[in-house]
Length: 495
Ligand SMILES: *Cc1c(COP(=O)(O)O)cnc(C)c1O
Image (cartoon, rainbow, N blue to C red; front, side, top):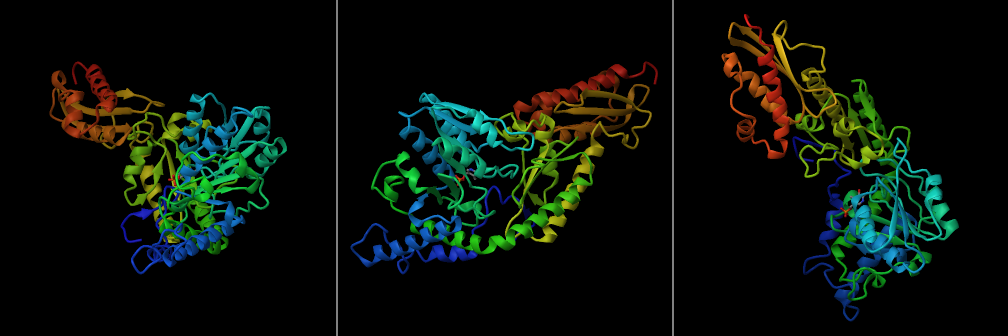
């Protein structure tokens, strides 16, 4: 990949493999197989239909399914919606209870919330501290009116793999349809639906080096009568997902599945070794928690939380890495990762999590760069924190004032050296989001030369305007004001 930034966010999306790009481009132009695969009357349509059939066979082969058990969709969100809404609505006369988990992707949770509005009741299982859903918990949650259990194959944030076989067996025994969201698992670990007790399985192309906007739903033959369409039109895909098939997307998905099937036996151990190397290189810092520890996990996903470090500041300092964080500092919601919260992680640890996800184009050198960068940045932020036992140089014997504190989202301490009525030197320690750190650093520069009576330069609202801090975060700047005011109060009468 041509970039100064190392891409370690393969669980968010993957680049399309060049071989997949080539296959897709043969389905679009005037010399390609651009026809409508439903047009059986001429050669253009028939050629497109052949390409679609080939792709369906490639997708099925990856899962050990039959080609006619594959429904093409636009991705895992659509597949999950079709599965959850389609199963529930077609079984409403048999029962109205659904079992799922708190750590599902929103593409399962939101359709479940929709169904609650339609009168269904949903049980959201809480995982254990490792992120696992115990099949016994599913057994205990199902009722005579349960019509659907939906538990993901592997979690997108922490990579924890569920006991799909164990959960499916319970559903089979009770005659309950079992759906699994396998968007993170397909192509990453072996999946054989000919032996797994799974009725319906969702996945998507862009997590396995295929195109975005292409996905599939595996529907076991015996489960089909219990699945109803949620969209209506030309009857394609057995009426379950009508609409002209996007030949190039379908062909890209097929090619991606064929490649994944070929590469999986070598890629899984290669990436698993990289993941372990990464963990070993980071764990030495101390105060690092492996999220999903003790559970079986995807080979290429590593999710860790750092004590004493704020996630957003950490990610910002790791400019050479493209990674994701469970921190909600900059996102619309104030809540950090609901998945880590469901595991019982406290807000600080949920807020300080990083997800590294490795992939086909990751090298050992990339992993080593990541290890060095994380070590550097975590050490830097920890030494900057008021929790550090290292006093900033020049801060010795100075008067200090604090705002916020341990366990809060912001903690600031200023160290002032004063002579009489005037600040001679100012140092700071800070824990918090990047905005907080930036304003604290600016403040430490602004204080020298100022007098006790007029120590504070301006107001938090003015600092926010100057530094581009969003209004929602003004509260954090009030903590900086608290620290400045604490310095004023502690200023000796005759220094
Ligand atoms: C990415 C992902 C989805 C959504 O897939 P799209 O193809 O983007 O709609 C659903 N579930 C899981 C577990 C995912 O990782």
